[in-house]
View 1 (cartoon, rainbow, N blue to C red):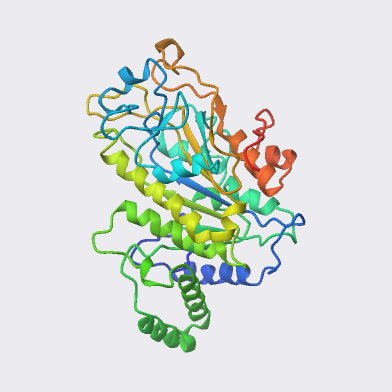
View 2 (tube, rainbow, N blue to C red):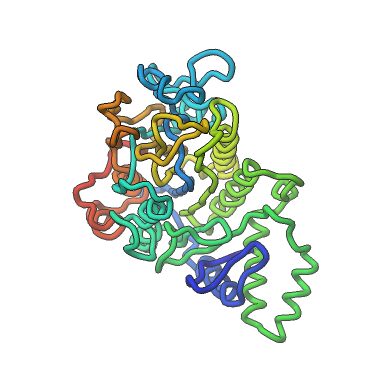
Length: 413
């Protein structure tokens, strides 16, 4: 069902949404439906941009392992990836190797349609999930500054008349990264059993006479659902875990974005990446999560079809995890991590990194991978070269107070 973010005093649960949320959801759907249908830029491209937020802090050293660093194996201990043996990591180059649970990303990388940015972080240097996610999604240097996100401000700054200017928020609530003044439409993946169509239609008929505005919102929400989930392949399966849920979310989002008059910009957030204990190495908890992410990227590729060639997906997390494992075979909150890029418009087949090394003297505060690349510069580079935003608006509006962070060039073709 379509959804829209609510004020902090309102709740939004899996059991239902408030009347106000439904009304606002209908309004945003109408805004999307009546935006210009001609969506191609002047150069003939029709770009799509997706950001996937991994909440909980991804272990970048376990996802793209620096197997060529002589200090890596000892620090990551039993969960370290290896070049050979059972469940060997997938080589990316002579120094870095990819977690074996991500064969689809490895294929994209080989086809030069995916890339890794390593030793990356936002400007935040503490280790609070709440504040780290706030900085990651708001785009401000510190937490608690605003209630809008950098992606919404980027959407609002896009040249008018060239592309459909609405964003797609996937999930029960709109992520902070996509909250703001620019219009958005929401879609909740069917991870729970859905109301039958005849029941929904009876509700619409009931409210047509008693509350026409609510009936309109319900009807428009059903239209979104039919586009995103029009076959049995989108129905949740009994016992479905987070891996399957990630794939369903990506498939539904891609269906909406593939439409000629659909949204060109989307945000998804996947929870559960806080691996303090029993993280696992090539198999285990993290492996399952990475398999879900890998499947989600593959769903975007297959479902977008021809649109994939003009798509860039950026996968980011609030911070990394400690270089050394802890006493419960997990990793604690850290600093430097990775960002992943995927899509037909990515200039891929490479790991982009100013590698700091893992010797004790080179670790951030003696414990974390030292960040050498600012994540804001990576995202700026994509937004500038893929969506056409200027350096000035990126530094002043999208990522305020970031004039010193230069956009990374050459990330898209």
